[in-house]
Amino acid sequence: MAAAPHVEWVSVAPDRVVVATSAGAWHHRLRPGDPWEAFAEPMTGPGTPETTRNLLDGALASAGRRSGPLVAPQGVDAWVGRLISLYHTTHPTPGQMRVAASRFAAAGREPLASWAREKVVDEHGHDRLALRDLEALGYDAAALVGALLPRRAAALVAMLDAYVRAPDPIGCLGYAYALERLAAERTEAYVSAVQASLPVDATRCLRVHSAAGSDVSHVDDLVAVVAGCSAPERVAVAVAVHATALTLFDPSLCEPVAPSWAARALPYRRATAFMTRDLPPDTPAGADHG
Amino acid sequence: MADIQYPLSADRVHQLLAWKRIVARAWLDSSFKADLLADPNGTLAAMGFPMHDGVSYCVAEDVPGQQTLVLPPAPDSLKVDGVAGNADADPGF
Image (cartoon, rainbow over all chains, first blue to last red; front, side):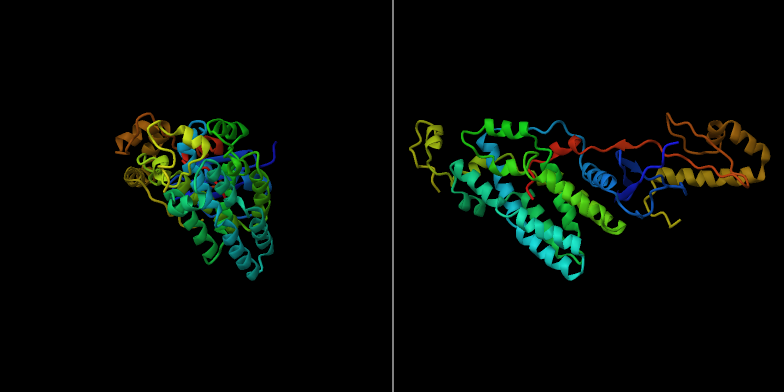
């Protein structure tokens, strides 16, 4: 007879629980009225790298409806909005992780403090990659990101700030997991498809936040840290993964179709060579400067 | 086991109210209990238990020295790659 699998679980809604073993994660609906409902109580017991990874993946996946394959945004108009978002979500990360590291250290939680200190270093400079990409596309990047803040990026930045300043900042691990795990879903083919739609190399920031970048190993590191946490801590991380994913997937935070990103970013375009070629024939070069 | 605190649907509340009456009658009426065990769906419906289309009910009796545990249905599996397309932003930590 096979050994009973190790199980981790977390409640993600009043009637829904994510249950994980080393083989995967499942969405279990609690059975009202069943006194033998196995997953109504908070998780207890230790984690393992395999089950904790699936617990966090399940908490993430349970936040979204089933979607089709990931579709790469096409063209400058679509990509400029993505880059502005990438700038805003990466810019505060090192500073926020410095706060988290300090607070974990003050509480004597050295493994968590060590992880946060590594993030201060690992995530440093990623915002500049987004700025370089925007500059390459012909924008005054600093002015552009100073003027435009996508709603979803604003919500995410506020979320990370709230996590690191909460009485227990451990939710920042869940926030990091959700973003880095989803970044790892961006394959080489996805990056190539974005790049192929652009007139210049403007995927520096994306490459770092893709399966080709460092986020895959960061996810592995994070799983190892979380698996060593207590059951209540792992629950808190998984709940934060789920909450972060809800924000990432929230349709109410989608940007309006009009005005397009291209129209909103237009005042910050420089008259670069390729941009000038792109302008309609009756538009004088430089007329679109902000 | 701690108190179970999650919302019951109105339908489930009605089922539980009917089930209370059915349980009490089975304790008092051995003929009724035999009918309930032999023909649970017919007996439940006759007692006003709200039935669901396409759902068949099983009734088992616990006796001293024996307790019935119910396996929940196999849940849906969760995959990150199945939901990654929900966001209109590329995640950057």
